[in-house]
Amino acid sequence: MAQDEQALVIIPTYNEKENIHSIVELVLSQVANLEILVVDDNSPDGTAAIVTEMAQANPRVHLLSRAGKLGLGTAYIAGFKWGLARGYAYLIEMDADFSHDPCEIPNMLKAIQQADLVLGSRYIDGVRVVNWPLSRLFLSKGASYYVRIITGLPIHDPTGGFKCFRRKVLETIELDKVRSNGYAFQIEMTHKAWMMGFRVREIPITFADRSAGQSKMSGHIVREALWMVWSLAFAHGFRRKPHATLKSDA
Image 1: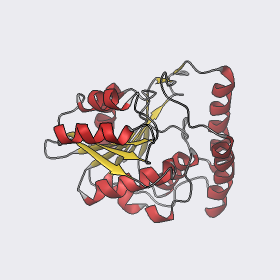
Image 2: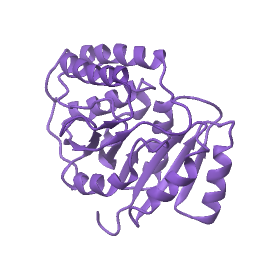
Image 3: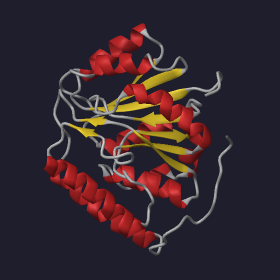
Image 4: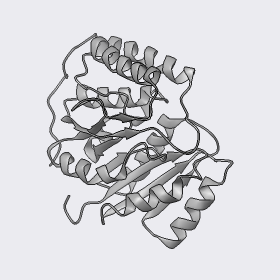
């Protein structure tokens, strides 16, 4: 990453007071020209107050407060718009609960130099998941196969949420038309980028289930993802390859 290029890590939060201070500090320690935006959905546990205090002490920390619990997808869209308006070259999305290892950020920024979208994958170079019950692993792996079969998306881990976007990708995708809000959001964004011909690359990461706070997984999130896969396939006439071949300015 060039010295004059900046990356923004976007972390959506809802009741993450147990994790937020530590995750912000560890993220910022990875790369010098990297900043953080926490998008907080009015957490009743005081997460935003912790971030506000950190932002006052460190200009690399930013807070975007929202009125209520509006969902993961809309949090990322708000964060993307915030980052694009301020000129960041790369925008990274990750969780606040340490399931995504901040130490992988330099690897993502290195990989993005030859790609437009980099995905941290749990399912290349074996299964790289820690502390998940078998039922959760089977659900996740099954969802990956489901997405590949229905849409043709050649990605091993389409539901993963540790990603790095080159700004051109987010400028090209019509963010206001992104419809999904849970894990389906991850599938939809990757599918859109791939269909537009952007270079999508997966790199291996190890995913560790949260040790503090509460999981946001729900039946509604799973159902939304099942429906969204068919919607994406239908919208593109069940096309199995990109509409074009694009290459952003690298």
